[in-house]
Image (cartoon, rainbow, N blue to C red; front, side, top):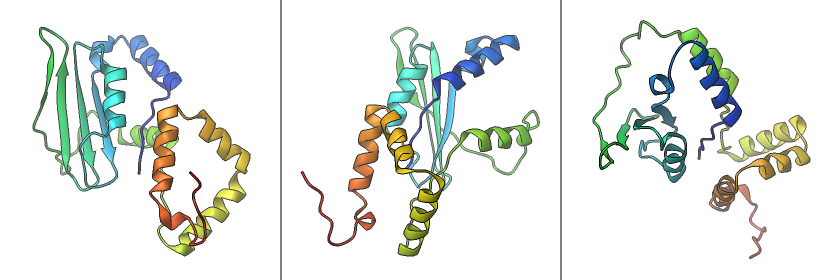
Length: 176
């Protein structure tokens, strides 16, 4: 299970930095590339909502998804003329470096801004994970994070928990 959420303040800071560097939004804010942790590169409902909300006012925009297994998905959406969208063929060349990129800066930004959470798989991992989480932050902190989520994010989180019977012991019941 994974989810995406743009931090509005971070996006505003990024836009400000780019404009200060002399770029126009149409030069840096039309292509959304992101990864999916599993085998599917198909956009999720959250991806579609985010793409529409964040990039919907652009004359054109591209959403590109790369799955962990290497599968890809890309779609060009355009709002000029009659408007429309078309899936476009893409492939990723992992065998060559991209000269203008700054891999160290990218990794530093990634480490500072991307939070990965692994669902425990074994009973031992569940216990170890729960102990670590409880020692790192309080239940109140966890509820505060939950309450800070957008309603659709909360619903998605609850649905994910409901679909994980391995998180509940055999005697627990979910009340209607």
